[in-house]
Picture 1 (tube, rainbow, N blue to C red):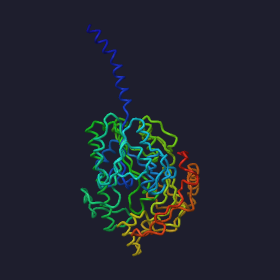
Picture 2 (picture 1 turned 90 degrees about the vertical axis):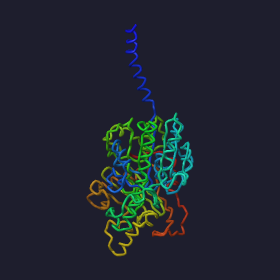
Picture 3 (picture 1 turned 90 degrees about the horizontal axis):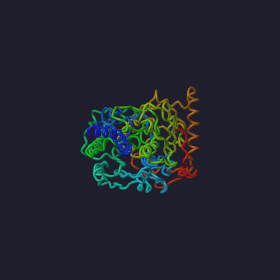
Picture 4 (picture 1 turned 45 degrees about the vertical axis):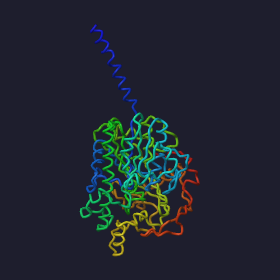
Length: 486
């Protein structure tokens, strides 16, 4: 009798083990995207910032994958966010300009998750069209309830979720967007201890500006830690894939609205113990923000629709050393001021095509209104600006810019008109024009004009609140699903 019992147990063990493995494999991952509002790639501590304190972000980076070459498709918030949600380039969403809304027929990937059994929630800054509201079971966009930084409902979203469904959470902070509000982290960073980057002025106003900016990054980091604690409390931390990123660069001159690395390169951390382990890893592969949508859908076992122009980077989660993309593309359209720029980036080179070279690139209105801009303006009056500091005031600008980013990471040495790099520029120009043609991009004559004078004070122009021709209109780009080259 005992032998029969032992035999039965031994024979049943493989079946039991197989069953447990299948159950584990069938368990769908949860997803959380933490997205900062105006934060450059090198602002968190784990990316080399020695001033700001981001222990929670740094901890996730230490036991996850830290990506070093993730690029947004736009350096303005709503075009960037709509691009992430739809997995499409800004001109293909119908919302390429700041504060414009994609058509209702657009589909966000959280909506596809909802239709496949996921509980989907947004909390914090919304800044997307009605189509995106369909993506979520619940939208928490009440500014008063979300708090000054947009993070105060994040933990409650986890506490109130249905426990019988996998979940997707879009946690969109309003930190560290201007204006800086007084908060419990004010004063964390001391202005006298901060040395501004060399392209800004080393002056009291700029140091204080950066200190308050870093205080808000500290608050963003704090609430990430609170969410992580709740995930651990609910015992779902290991099976939750966490992404930490930003929507565009910091709101300072030389960064936000630019199509260089300071405007488009995002911090990007992926943490998922059940899927990638906890051994620290780094990934240098080129990734576009439109690649997030197909990656999450694939991990959730949801079919990726043809409308998505991005490419899944699931293979990078298993092997971060793989090659992935040859090119990433991005664009800048109206954001307070008339603009039309297109960018292609490889691992080594950046190429920019500027269709409005007659204008300077001083930054958006909130950057021009900042103490950091005022300090640069004071140096200009005194004739003491360095060439790098003065770059934002240059006009007319070159119609083409090309930078060897591996030797010139700050991208101030324009090689577009250097005979030595003429062949490389021609290749990149050809790749960019091909992408524009394939994806139905356009350069309208009647672009949206400046809504403000290009000076401090938010002085309105006669064109205020008047829109020009959208870049998607001529070639019906919202119906174009061509992915272009990878």
